[in-house]
Image: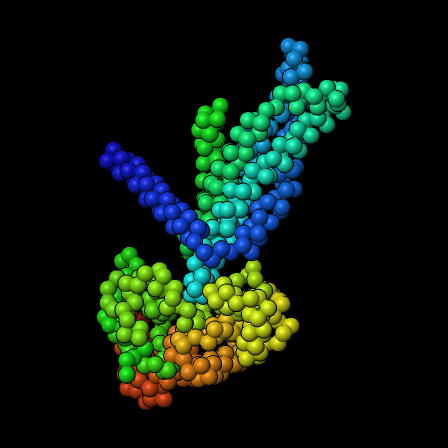
Length: 256
Length: 259
């Protein structure tokens, strides 16, 4: 019994210690981020990596999700003659929920893992030490640009994902389920409000922050060679995915 | 004249492992000191303490008469401006081209424009025997020996007055090792820099060092001019330079019969 309580207590203490280290890491990075010099080239590179290079993954995910959503909605709604609601269901679900969450989870796998692996490899190959000896603060040079790019690029990606998802729903509804194209589009735009889109974008910015922070934190603190980098990558993806799902609930409650 | 570095009773532990156990050492300005010792004796930890990358548990390190163990981030950053480092695995930045690696400090710390920094980088690459065609490659596209030369060019790019070399010839064949040793010796003398080299390669130590210090069990057990090490009767030195399995240096290994 004592052994079990000690184990639970140890897990809890480890959790508190990690949370404390994460907060200190974030505060130090933010204080560095606002002080010159600013590494614009690094920020642009991260815009490219996180934003542009993630477009195919996000586009495909959103397109097929929109198509499946239309099909599944039809299956349910046709049972009580409410097929006309499909357009509104697709657009509201994509903008408010599935766009930001699916984009967040996909980017967590693609970018969070890449950040942890890249920075982790830099740690174990002494490249971070080299940066310090070259009079460059690693948190300012490596972490701050990734945080900025994560927070700004995710909303843009989600905006594109929303449009592609709605388009996927349109394709299935019109060409498979026989909806009238004009009335489908009209219903889509009639039902969606600016608040639906902005709530999704606020979520996306938060998810982008979580993904970048966890990827950078675990990469920056990795140790022990290839195995350590592998662990850092796993922790980054798992923790950011879980945090996205938890944060999503609280943000939805706030923005409901 | 104030020594460049004065290390007094330096201790550092990681958990239960007591790596440095009272290191005492003085390094004169313009001197090339080589610290030799077996694997895991704390050579790299000592180097990182001197750089400020690791905080020692106790003891004192003075550089130019100023205590550096309690310096702030900003003071450390300013001090490192005049120090060049070649890391064990070169530690070149994979995402940058070779010339960008060499010019890194010029561009990011000294805010020189990229065109001018590239010219200096090409000069430094030429100084270590690499031509312009290498400059546009990424570090992954060149051999280990060339990477070590690029790391050396990066270390000397801003003409620092202090140079640190962490096992600069590890993993290189004897010919490349000699080339790197020659380049280190020439760069140190040309710059008139104070150099501290960490190695367990005796050829390298004899070639680049004015003085050699032997680190064993976290403390300096012998220190003297490089040309006298072979005449030393110190049992630690004798065991180390002749690579004898038995002697005062205890190896943390246990051998068993294969069959």
